[in-house]
Amino acid sequence: MKKEKIWLSSPHMGGKEQQYINEAFDKNWVAPLGPNVSGLEEDIQDFLFTENTIKGQVAALSSGTAALHLALILLGVKRGDEVICQSMTFAASANPIAYLGATPVFIDSECDTLNLSPEYLREAVIDRIKKGKKPKAIVAVHLYGMPYKVDEIHTIAAEYDIPVIEDSAEALGSSYKGKKCGTFGDIAVLSFNGNKIITTSGGGALISKTMEHKKRAVYLATQARDDAPHYQHSEIGYNYRMSNICAGIGRGQMRVLDDRVKERRKMNSFYEQIFKNNSEIKVQKEPTNDYFCNHWLSVIFFKSGPNQFSKEGLRLHLEKENIESRPLWKPMHMQPVFADAPFYGSNEAEDLFLRGLCLPSGSNLTEEDRGRISKSIQNYIN
Ligand SMILES: *Cc1c(COP(=O)(O)O)cnc(C)c1O
Image 1 (cartoon, helix red, strand yellow):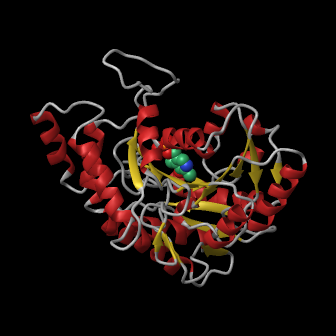
Image 2 (cartoon, rainbow, N blue to C red):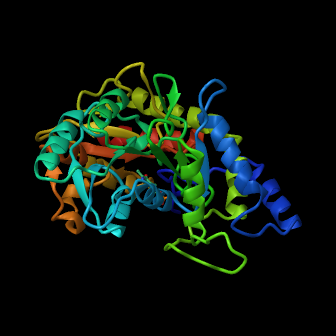
Image 3 (cartoon, rainbow, N blue to C red):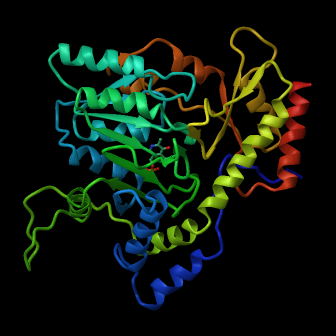
């Protein structure tokens, strides 16, 4: 009999989600608005912004991709513009740039955090300005929950006065120098897709510094209706608001977010332990104490050059035992669909992609699951 599948990252309900959904049914708030939507926005706001900081504004949306799309619109990105984007990321960071007819300019990674290289970012900004087009925005990603080099990246952005869209889709619960990810960008984005650290089955949020931005995001997300008794529109709108049912799941999930972060970090320590005496394989870790990673996914790297073990070898070995693992995000500058987009860098992201593997990281993995994973890995490397 085939053993039960161990997933990379699967939904993990906390128990209170159903209660919020029942309330929505009881009061017939089965709609893309209602008390769960505003409740979830407040929960996220309270989580991200501590007592004595200026609170950002949260708009709950139908997906992280929708939030990125609206973020670009709020920053005035139009056809023919250029937007800088981290190359090593999930396609959703870059696709909305193309929705608007703008061109993504991809930047290589540095290997401390896998994220935007400050060096190549600066080179790209200078070169694009020299070529006559100042980039309209920078999409910076906290990949696998690891904060990007916040100080360096935001210093460059400020120097050239380019707004940052902080793609924090994978980094809810992470922080940098004690400040939560999702609070750094001019606009930040969260995702509550089914595989993320918490989920609403599908959903996202846009975090902005001003109420004007939030209001405009909600207006665009609800078909851009003018203030009139009839349906009147002066702009193209979208259907991007989160439903009150999904938001109910989100409210339940927010109550257990801190536990989920603990569990994911425990999975990372578990892999640290497995590979601690292995000279061929390294587990990704926080570069300094400034970084606090939710370890949404735990990542390992195989040594470069010819060796006996490979990420693909391990992946196939685990697959045979019904354990899911996955290569890192294939960099966008290597994707057929973005073959014509400019790229600044060398081969850092490509090298990380070739050597890296994501291992099962779910907060709902059991002691028995860990036993199976550990045994399977040991069998491969011994
Ligand atoms: C998941 C994800 C998104 C998109 O979120 P959806 O809610 O799936 O649309 C964007 N960026 C990154 C880095 C992601 O991992």
